[in-house]
Length: 411
Image 1 (cartoon, rainbow, N blue to C red):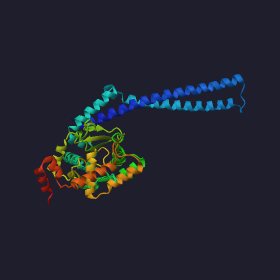
Image 2: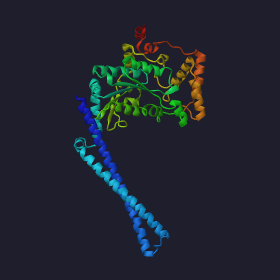
Image 3: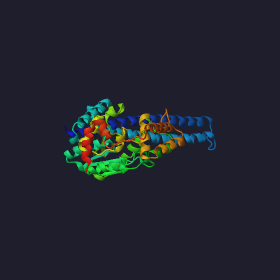
């Protein structure tokens, strides 16, 4: 597959779609401006006729004041109409410039499906995709999926002799995360010799919750949008500027997203166009490079390649997310609380205090106080939770795989 031609086609389709949208917006603006102009002209004619028929032309009369206001409104409406017509003319010129593309992809649905097909085909050729890119950014949480995504991206970059294009970025959520996450993310990047950047959103997760007075939930995942997605844009802007290109840059934004994680993630494609971040100077593609891997395959990659993972997975927790994830169920939250007790972390009390302070329950059906109480009860009955290094691998791949993995880490 000719990846560069596919990328040019995707950009032509994107720009053609924007031209259609801009032309439609300009048409609506002209109609609205024309209606406002007609209404203003009617008011002006009304007060002119009123003064002419009643003789109320004195400058101090209410009719004269109303006439002046009508004149002013008519002038403003006329200027607005002229501007709207000028925008429509420019939009029409742009639309005509994209006519060849629109003749080939006339309908919006056709443009979307054609872009999807091209992106899906490109995802089949990761080495060619990396070679065509100017910048490759790995979004790493330091979790198991992130490190496997990083490993596979680096492998493709090495095969393309393009490792110099790869950079890693970690969004630090502050005290809401498990200890050592930032340091692990750095070590994972250093293993491959790729530049590593930490972005720290102001206030972190707990600061965002306190300022908002509410916890995020599945429908309003502000922890993802405000603390992870939004900080990415300025970083991409800065890094693209550093490239100093006189053309549009091709940016791959690598994510450790797997379809097996949830129904919504299963619907995501391996490669998508990030329309929110893409602009005239950069075409940004989101690359879910491990989308088709199962959880067992992820752990197999970790074991086979001796990849360092966070010890929190050995406790039985399934993800290296925030200590208290708003998407987690009660069993997960109770285990996380017991792990906090074992590590002597103050987070349970800090979260519960914040919950009381803002007067909003962490979960709709139960409070963090209830979670903490349940965790204390289980600790009293069963004793504190314990774990060993390698337990995650023992669970997913068996004792032999864990022993072999640990042996490779022994100096």
